[in-house]
Length: 371
Image (cartoon, rainbow, N blue to C red; front, side, top):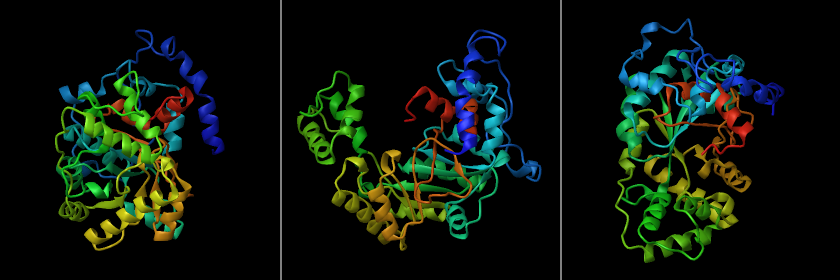
């Protein structure tokens, strides 16, 4: 960890401690409205004011910007260390990891915010920076989507295209052109409808997915099949992207990347399965796109050295984690690039503190999961 980051994180207990007491006026533990500019990025004087539609105050914007005591990002924006994090983040690369877009209006507002205050970059620009060993511009932000359900095409692409912002989508190849749900959605549905599996004795349905992910991959697949056999109902179909949709996304400046064949937890797979999951998806994407993909996102966001070896062998240039961190403007490990987890419904205040790196640092200090 760089010295500056270590220093910032180590100051968190003293910086966060007074927030519920005397450092903010008003009710204990609650932030007052207002606050500094967006975290991690600042207004670029050279950027034309008319570059995009401004966020207009209104019911939706007010609701999105309203503090919420249950969401730390809403009050962290007023933390004394936020300016420090914001200044440091201006010299870092923010790669945002979405999982689909459920609220196009909110997503569009986030894009407007980025376009006014940041420098959206493409996957190709990141690849070129790595190849030329030249850092990206300050306040660079890359938008990515994992799993790539149809909302990336129907909701995200129109908003991105209207603003001229590039992005990247990492797809699960065995779902392309099918109506199969994601396996974790299927498992949850089957469990709610009487599905049982010998390896999944849990006290609460919320424990099902963590339990499935913790199993060795053959046991996960076997347990999922047991759920299918024992459940009272089959899950409804979920229309997935088609090969033609992938081409449409690419034509709309959304680069297509590899997210394995079936989205297993690679750390629970044997060596042969790790290789098959990556190469199988690589071959399918090369066939559909007419060119090999050059970027990969690790399923569940965790780095796997065996996967990295396969990626290097196949000529991949970029690999993305989901570790909820900012990264350097010139990635030191191109196959281990950090990303920040965000959602299209993330409030404006939390969006700011995620971009600054403050909310991720707070979560690490608290030992909280970033999923």
